[in-house]
Amino acid sequence: MLMFKRLALSCLSVLAMMAYVSAGAVEIPKKDAAKTLDINQVEPAKIPPPRTMTLEPGEPLTAATCLKCHETVKTGKVKPGHFNIECLSCHTVKPGGGGLCAKGSVSFPEQKQCLSCHKKDKKLINWSFAEHSKSGGQCIDCHEMHTSPLIKKTLPGAEKIQKDSVACVKCHQDVTSRLNMSSHHPVKEGALSCISCHNPHDSNKTVLKSKSEQCLSCHQAVRGPMAFEHAPVVEDCMTCHTPHGSPNRKLLSVSQPAVCLQCHSIAQGKHGYGAGLEPALTSGTRTISGAVLRSCTNCHGAIHGSHQDPLLRY
Image (cartoon, rainbow, N blue to C red; front, side):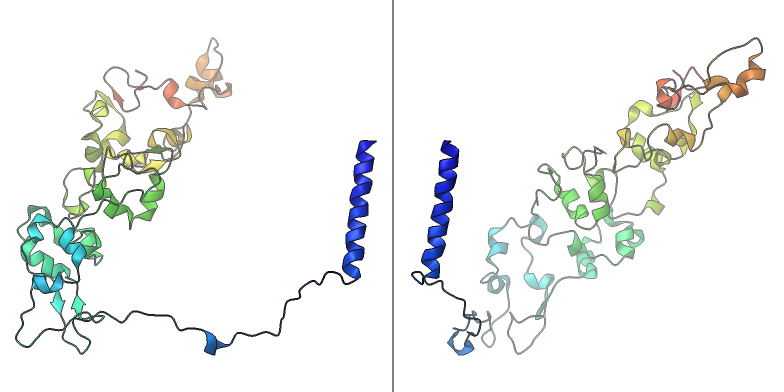
């Protein structure tokens, strides 16, 4: 009963308000659509004048002149090899009417300028054959000339990522997405970096060891030689695995048993139910076991090779 009384009072209140407004007691403001903005009344934005730097006649251009504006270079952690080098050793100043700070007046060093000093570095012995060199990459694409900041959170949850990997994932976005998959090498956790497997200044063509040899340098538990070897382990680990990340367990490119069935067929005589007096005659009619279609490694546990069993079961 109380509920009906409250409902009736609410209806009466609404009706009274409508009558009050319709009688003209309350004037509802209307938006003036015809009103326009006078641009003459708008105060122009206060744009700071461009920074300029001029030299007095006969005044030399030194690092002290540059550091008057580039304070972050002065206060930052400068690389030891570049600390006592003049700015003009790497940067080229182009004379112009806009002063030293005009756009395009100072150029960044190119690859040949970097190699003029770093040509004796043993890491660059095969730089001419490297993929980064052939693709037109410049040193400053990966290396900071003045500082080496560690950019965190380049990957989700990558607070511990190493600085070498930060430079790589900026360009290799396809690899970045794989490092976020459920099964991945621990790059964003900081246990590995990209240069643990890759040499950015070298080429795969100049390396004599195979891809499997690169993997087995860490995965010692599956290293051979074995009495009974599994061919993909010797030839190429990436026949079954994808190195950066996969939605499947253990970095498998395809989940089991499909990854095995790419090369192997299921022999019904060995993987089917039942037994008879003449197994060879009835093997083609046996039903394939459901366990076989779930995981091949349930029986073939020594999938990377065995010293005892040619069927790689143990």
